[in-house]
Image 1: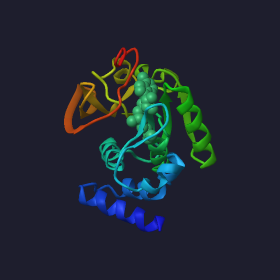
Image 2: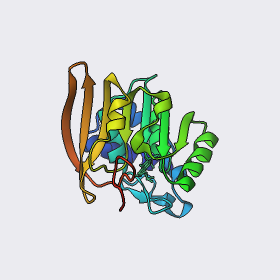
Image 3: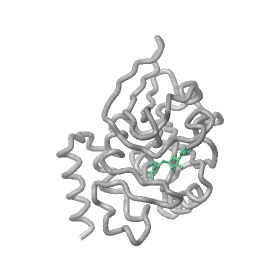
Length: 211
Ligand code: SAM
């Protein structure tokens, strides 16, 4: 039953343009139903964002797939995620062989994700903090993914990115954002701007001050 729903979701993602087989395989393998409340489990493989605790969301599978595809992760890459939320995106990155570091500002979500990811056997390093200032201790990172909407790109995150690295981040107003893909090169930064998305706000020192 669940297998059928998973296959249907993968077919939907392919139809919407996701081509990276590694991303599709990870989405197929990570049990999304474990990252949401039991009452919503029947919707686990619908292509929709779902509410989690503390008025936050687990992103739509298409958004996760699109952002992960844009991130272009290789096995062994050191990846920093800002906005652990349910822990689902972290699990996808870990499944793809990345060394994952993820920061969440809400204690309850951080603790729940820590417990779940460890129960499921994902080796992800988690921190409770304001992720707009990054995670200096383990910098620099090959890739940085921000899963909340920012008013602008936090300077600290750019600083903690390796030369040759990439950051994927939704930037815009509180209501809607566009996905920025930024590459750090020896000559500076190159920027591509993609799709419109709607994320919960990135709140912090280098994000939204209040919301
Ligand atoms: N990646 C998550 C997942 O797979 O479930 C979805 C993340 S949810 C759309 C955005 C998360 O970003 C929320 O849990 C929110 O609390 C968190 N967040 C917002 N501002 C933050 C900040 N400054 N530092 C860390 N986390 C932040």
